[in-house]
Image 1 (tube, rainbow over the protein chains, first blue to last red):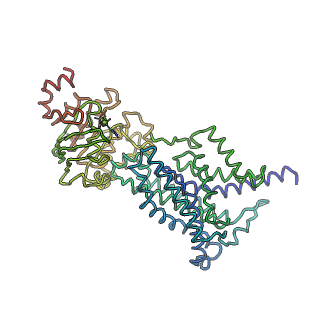
Image 2 (cartoon, rainbow over the protein chains, first blue to last red; image 1 turned 90 degrees about the vertical axis):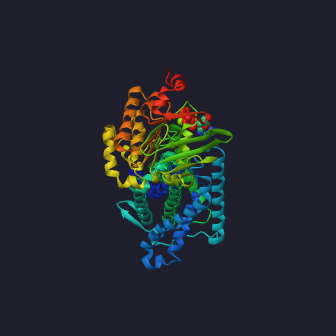
Image 3 (cartoon, helix red, strand yellow; image 1 turned 45 degrees about the horizontal axis):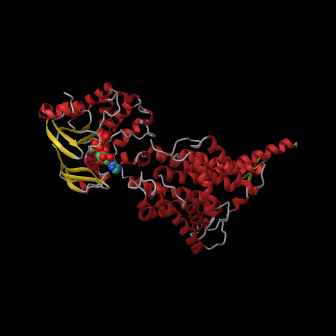
Length: 313
Length: 235
Ligand SMILES: Nc1ncnc2c1ncn2[C@@H]1O[C@H](COP(=O)(O)OP(=O)(O)OP(=O)(O)O)[C@@H](O)[C@H]1O
Ligand SMILES: [Mg+2]
């Protein structure tokens, strides 16, 4: 085999790995993008909802015995999906009692002070979740034990990791369902209206605060599903949210703040860049590569790939 | 149908409405006119619940409106076509109309009202799939009115529908509003700076200046009033 053929295989291998990782990143970014898109709230706790998703999936898989019943292949997938409703409920309650007090119709348009309260609140939630996680779950790294994480399918010369492929498929389906929900259903449409213009939405009889609550909870749940899926190919501890929240923000800003579709492609791009960078850079510099590409795109297209400005028209 | 009594609204220390009394009877066309900053939009916001009055009362159709949450008020049959149109820019024309039909009555009568709206504004039918943000100003105003109608309202409130439009387009809009009132039996509350056009079609008019009603009367009485003729009609 020539050097070129070897490089071509490496390249394809990284491309496939990038796409597969990108799928789950895309889903996690969609969750964050949805919260920002509808509520215009910068949620610093999003990484910790991701972390909660990982633990929810872990406990559903192991303690609830889902893996024992459904086996080590289907079990982790179902557990990953189950993280969605669990964290959806957490998000709903947090919005009802805390987040909703500093966001919503009353806070829309208040620059300055309104936004400070939001930032401090979500930072506070992040700290509570991290340290609460440490107390509840312990600091020992865990992962969902599935044989898929170490098994691969061979396609020609390529090795395709099974756990990542399954996660990719599930993530894409969930993202697609969310897209259809927002595009087609009356509830989804009313949420888009509330995002476009909360005051006018109120004049339509849309309960904007409830739309926000739904968006917040859904955003948390969707990011948690991404976490639950990644939990079977990566080990985690209560502080893992911090690593991912930065990647998530990079993806969302890359795609264009306020655009949920943009968040999807932004997340996908991050996954691709991260994996492709291993072709030319040492493994430890993965995240550096992400930020170099991030800065480049922002330099060239300040509103992100899907260029809708964050301002409302 | 709508009865507003000694309504007071303030933004911080600034009084925007000061003891305003306005009454709209079922089936009437009522116009509120006045210069910039008179408090016309504030009046509408108070009716719709996006500002909370400091005092006074608003009763509508037997309800104490101030006790009804803002998001419930449209479901009672109040449609507010806001100043500056405020369409949903990233949604299509048809989706905007569907949002108008979010009220219970609107949903029930969606098939009929959609036809009515398309008959009034054929351009909306042609542009069904276009994003509302890309419509021209006149088309957006038509959409905003159509969206209001789609809720199958009893009371249609229009805040300066002629704002920023070419005279010919504004005339069309006024014609359509009259048509909506005459042919579809909707009670209309119109706020306007174009006093001549607004007073022309109304049964009853109010003149609002710096937060107070300074004059009120029937169409004929206002048109004949010396002060109105001087200050607003340029006669
Ligand atoms: N959100 C706000 N905060 C502070 N002051 C406000 C606010 N909205 C309106 N005002 C003030 O209240 C007064 C009445 O404003 P309003 O918008 O009701 O007038 P208007 O009659 O609708 O004027 P226009 O014809 O220009 O639309 C103005 O002095 C205005 O500056
Ligand atoms: Mg106004």
